[in-house]
Image 1 (cartoon, rainbow, N blue to C red):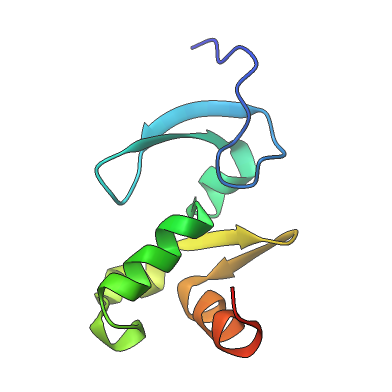
Image 2 (image 1 turned 90 degrees about the vertical axis):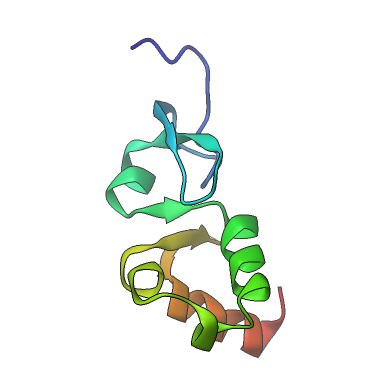
Amino acid sequence: MWMGDLTCEVCRKERAVAVASSIAPISFAYGRQCLRNRAEPEWLIASMLEENGGLQGCNKWFLDCVGTYLRGKYLTVREYDRHRKLYGK
């Protein structure tokens, strides 16, 4: 599939190699590294944590299998939550 000039909607750096369904009912353009790291957009992870009342309200699969990309680094949901608590958004 030709992706044209699409950029990854997670890291906003890589050229997109696929458009795929997300953990929410929406699709995003993903770069190769973000796909490999099962990274979702930061705003989506933040909203899911808020909606579920933090880590304690999240399903195990979400905590174990999903992550995000923040400031040049891939983070698990737990690492992202810790970062938010230490530094704010």
